[in-house]
Image 1 (cartoon, one colour):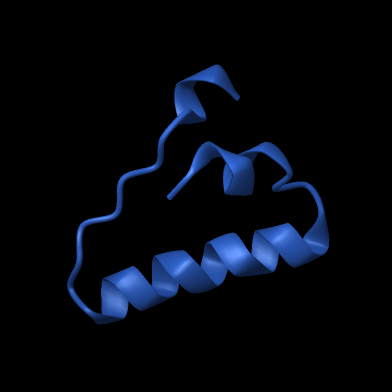
Image 2: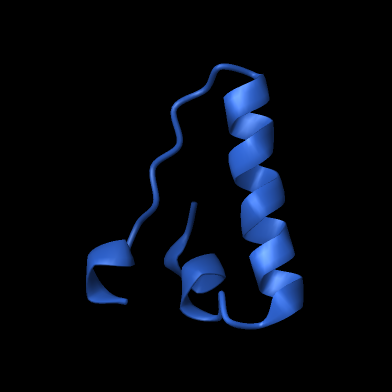
Length: 40
């Protein structure tokens, strides 16, 4: 997951996108790596 999604996570629409991506990865048993989170 790119940092651009995480940067604006306080916006409800962006939070919904992030949540959907995480849920989809979990349902497909995929690993999800978030880039740039340490600088958030």
